[in-house]
Length: 87
Image 1 (tube, one colour):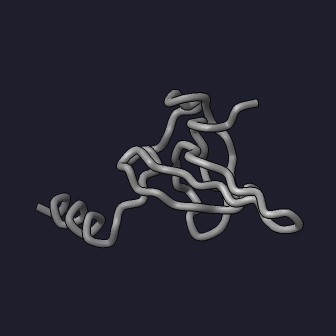
Image 2 (cartoon, rainbow, N blue to C red):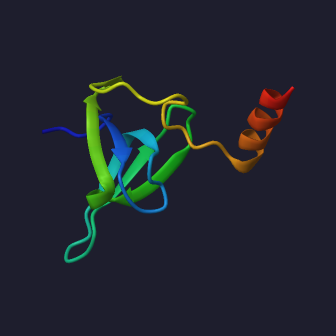
């Protein structure tokens, strides 16, 4: 069916554990299909089709997401969140 904007979780590669909606898919004949995604914070990333696991349609996931909704924090955001917790 139509894939765009389905909610996916990445199950392999560098972006493992991230959750995002599909923006586009890039077909490369004889090679990997590349899926471009965007997470809830607006960060874009790309991964191979084989790493993508669809967990919902549109904005609604079929499964409950862990704390943070699968958004990968930048190193700075991650550090700020950890420092805030220590106070």
